[in-house]
Amino acid sequence: MLLVALLLVPCASALAQPEPTTVDDFSGDIAQWLSKPNVSLSAENGCLRADVDFSQASYGWLRKTYPGSPLDVSARDGVRFRARGGGPGCKVSVHLMTDAAAEKPPTLATVTAPSLDAPDWQTFTFAWSAFAVQGSGRPVPPEALRHIEVVNISVTGTAGASVTVWVDDVQFVALTPEELMAQAQTPGGRARIPDD
Image 1 (cartoon, rainbow, N blue to C red):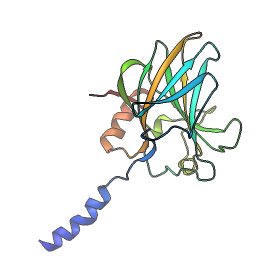
Image 2 (image 1 turned 90 degrees about the vertical axis):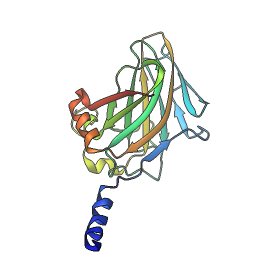
Image 3 (image 1 turned 90 degrees about the horizontal axis):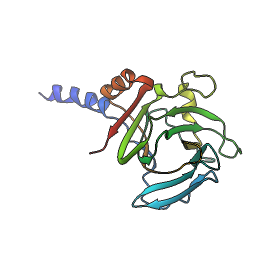
Image 4 (image 1 turned 180 degrees about the vertical axis):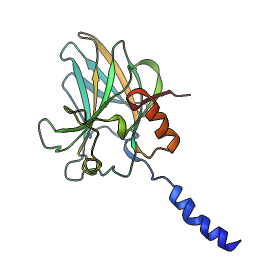
């Protein structure tokens, strides 16, 4: 019996998943987040509120930077965040970038969520297979995930409109085999789950 128990220990350890790498749960201030001039950011009830004015530009962005201390997310399987709000035609994209010091940081990879037009919180999960290298459509090379200096969230919408989007619990996560399979079976690898 002791031998069986000893043999089971490494198996259990092998199945243990890495803890999520949290970009922000917005339990503190939002001073580290930057935004495009047509986006107004504020903290509200433990989440990030973004008021976006599409009369000034066709999109808005908000980003958190890690200059000099890039994130290594190669041991994770994808990104997960919660969001609500938006409006007709509103879409949210996640961009992973390098070189936080650049005026326009180079984009390593991007993924676009399904349309966001709901008052209730929804959880969005994207495996790395859903991301593509911007401009080429190629899959993201694993080595690129070892040097992320900017996590950028972009919001697009109808010209002339204004929308409010709330974001919370942005994390790089490990996914179960079942979640990875579900992602592979979803067009674009996208998954949207209404929160209870």
